[in-house]
View 1 (cartoon, rainbow, N blue to C red):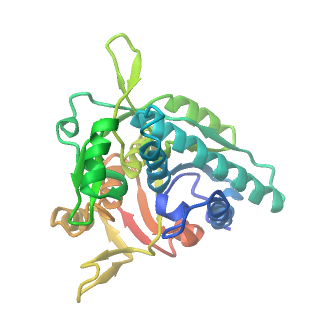
View 2 (cartoon, one colour):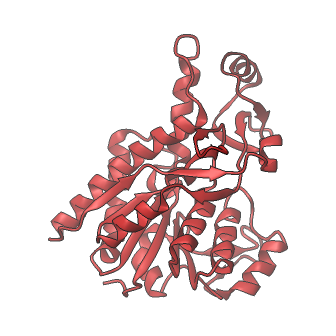
Length: 316
């Protein structure tokens, strides 16, 4: 049984819940959802108040591919709607299989999914320079046609092909976060903030509208945890720990590390933007924002990581 941590936010990475290098059929996604349920069961069976966020990268990529294949006949959906679609589909499978796992263990705890909007600043510099690649790779001819038919901005990606690039603005406000807290206080497990949240802008009159962007899931998770006053952020991914000099001769795993040490490594460029960088930055933001402990670990080690016995443990 995982140690009682009172309140914990668990951020499950997209690559940890979606098959890597596999077609990603519904059956395979269910298989991974079952795996997630088994990994989190000791935490869900405890008295912890649990909020779960999740990535959506592989799934939203497939949603975009469907639009590419149907670009001659079906009008495209905007990115905010694509994120909303991925939130609903992923959370449905996760919610169902977490509850199934709990029922098999004799627990009647409920799991609730909340479609989550996240406000961003319309003046965020990211909107002037879209750099976040999403979806599949295309050759240049197809990329030009996609630009023409769908209006997407395509960019060549390190010699591997062309990809759709969108802005990735900083999350500023989790919409309806009070509802997340109310549901969590009821004892239910809350799934929220999928894919970093549906990106929206709030107008002067209080109304909102979606924007063509994606928000980093880990940064949104850190913000959500800080606003809720949660002391422990558990970031689950497909690797056991954070490494320095990853893939190099001096590769070294980080077991326990404090915030100043991790911040120094981050500022030195030790963690790549496309892999561990956002997770490390989220841990830093969380601790600087009032959190007490951030943990980055493998999904399979979730309970041990919460107990302090696995993963990279970051303290203030």
